[in-house]
Amino acid sequence: MTSEEVRDLGSDPARLDQAPRVSQVANRPVKRASQAVDRIVARLDVSDARILHLPVNLAGTGWAHVNALRRKGIDARLLVFWPQRWRPEEYDINLDLPRHGFARQQLVQWRALARYLPKTDLFHFYFGKTLVPKSLNMPILKAAGKRSVMHFLGDDIRNKPLEQLGYRKKFDATIVGSYAATRWVPDATAVVPPGIDLRRYEPVPAVKRERPLVVHAPSDLEKKGTRFVVEACEQLPVDLDVVHGVPHDEAVERFKRADIVVDQMHYLWHGVFAIESMAYGKPVVTHLDPDAVRQTEEAFGLKVPIVSATKDDLVEKLRPLVDSFDLRKRLGEEGRVYVERVHDLEKVADRFIELYRSIL
Image 1 (tube, helix red, strand yellow):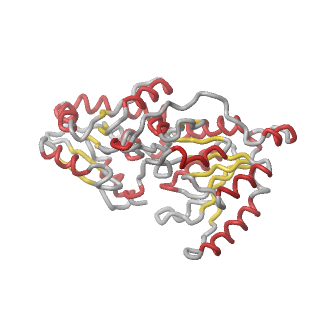
Image 2 (tube, rainbow, N blue to C red):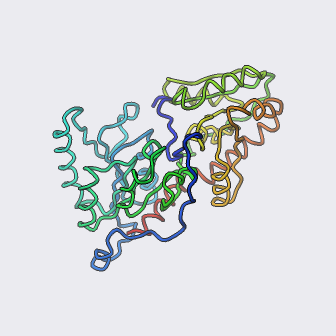
Image 3 (cartoon, rainbow, N blue to C red):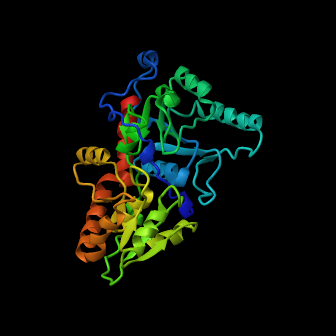
């Protein structure tokens, strides 16, 4: 995986200049897709359900999820249209769709639906995609008494009017990755922050330096506001490492050396890069929507230990971190605790199981 693929998965950030205000996610029971089927088919326990995640594995999200679920005894598999370039082995079922020819692709997809429909009780879709066109896929699932989840990840909802996402109502449940994303999907069933496998992240002890090292790892230089990060660091006694266009393993080694991490300046919530950085015990600076911060703190019962900044006050927000080793150390420690509470992949799997149980 390249640093290009360290996407804002689950965070669904909104552009500052394009974000309408909408109500927060409704707190209510999940509606059933087919009440008639419920009366006929006995309720299925989640531990007995066959769950298929599909049809993409963006930045390894789906593969991480099914493996976490399997560790909890859940029968979960991942089906992909194609494997990711940097994650060629991360799938259970690879359709390996033809790269060209819509009819040829559809033939493979319809054969897959025919094969896996009888073998699956719940379909967990990602990124606004289904196995075959939604207009046909969802009625078929409903008629067959199958349950479905749509898990939005970012670009599938960002800046889109609600009416363009009307298809969301065809699923038994919808998931977004942050409270900032509820401005795009205000009736999302659940907010499930993205998770990481904390067994792979050992905190790196803070180091006192005369010139702290700031690390910024943008997946997109323009969208992440890299120009403003560079300009801010030029005004401070720091060194800057912009990690871009390199394999993920190399990117990780570089941001493990960071004293301060700057995520992005244009969106309303942080991405996976910030989560990984906090897991390593690094203080993080990024832009955060204050309403989403409040909702997150209320939902999880702890403070979001991220320094919120904009392109206009980035120098001002960075300066205390540059000047104080103790502040950097404290925020790094608080970030690790926060990630353990909110972004631990095992807890994410528990949230999925709870959601599955509510709709099966």
